[in-house]
Image (cartoon, rainbow, N blue to C red; front, side):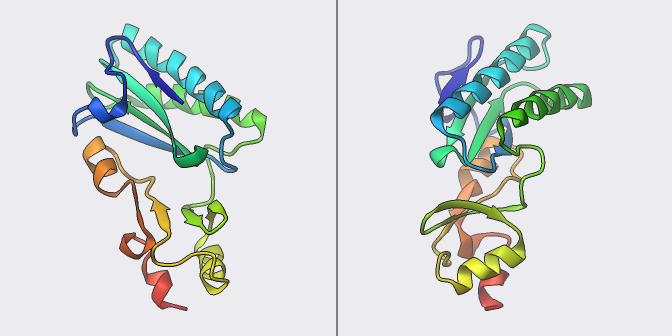
Length: 168
């Protein structure tokens, strides 16, 4: 699902590296209907932010089978008040059975699809052979598009939690 805002490029791919981003992880993964509902709700909020001159352009895309939604915008960083409004939209969307505000801290693509869990969960998945160093890791700490492009989804062996691999 892709949503873009007033005068926004058609996709995040055309945004500059300096664009701000917010990675919203979903637990469980979003199905197409839930992804459309969430991107529409976020799109309405971001369109309001454009009208209020809080940002210039925006785009929202569902990432890799619904594990996350990537929100990108140009202009300055959004204020605390804007983050509160974003939090409110995500909190409302959680009524549909997804966790957006406090999903487990690690998102990794196992042999059977994306999983979210703790370091202890990750150790268990590695021991069971469901996750390896080549498994993809989603880094939700990125703050701009350059960081997203560099390390948004990378091999676990290159991630900040790679030491769990050697602790087997």
